Image: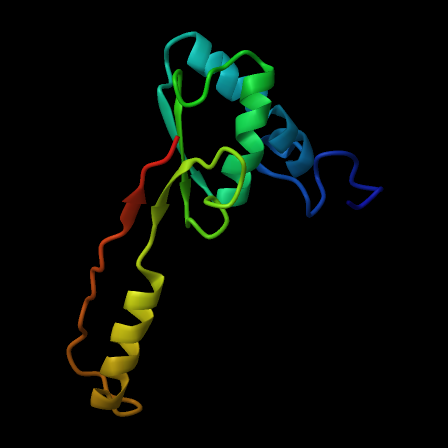
Length: 128
């Protein structure tokens, strides 16, 4: 952070001028409050690490996960091996990469012909 700019205005600042670390530290408080008022019943958290860190913070505030809110991670790269793994959406990254590699030989460099759209579906791994 630029000391001359003051708190909440440096490269580590987010919307509203709050330093990113402060916003992340407050996330369990805000989320728990939203769950307790009945406004939130689930959250899709990108990425696994953030979901894994969020769950103990919610439990420390009296929120029962997954009974009160469902917490679903997105990516499913590290969500499975933790003590209480969250459910996770696993994008079909390898399938997408393999299909894209298969298409490459059909597209010469500089070719501006029609595009192909691939829509591999993610997998939902339900846990807990």
